[in-house]
Length: 266
Image (cartoon, rainbow, N blue to C red):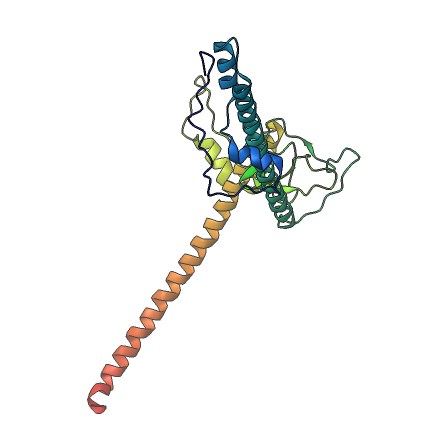
């Protein structure tokens, strides 16, 4: 084919025993009869030859069209798969919203629940699940009025009436090298474990700092302290009952031995 010939050894010839199906789409014939050529290969081939025979040009064009068709099919398949993923995520989001911890809020015109404020990294770890293992940060938050260790939040990404989700509050550790962590001071521990008036004063001081996590852990510590006190009281009461029961059991054993019960029933 002279110096301008192009080798297409990658194209397999169609066997004579295979019948040509004429009632098919033209694109199917292109895909079946021609090896795909990338645009870079076409450009390199054309650049390497000043004059390309018409037969070779036809092969180049059909190979390039085959590549385009294959890429269109791949793009359509990716689009269908992505749409399925989006639908699946929307279904999970709907299920998650239906299974939310129930509490209803009124929303303003902007779609933000009333009395909510912008998060602004106040609760940085507050992530709201949206399905498929994905989550979004809570843009607006509000402390629970009945439980100071819990906060409510919304993403404001799903329009007016988006359900609010609950999140536990915890104090964040200080990561400033110039302010190293120290053991808890005795005076602070006395306030935590002291009288109701002392504890109330400490909690109000924590609220003024605006650190919700710090205030929540102070409340949580006091709750644990009260629970431990109740449990220890119960333990002491049960121990006393156990000692009394053991004493009664010993008295019964002595009485049964004095009555020679084992000999009379032998």
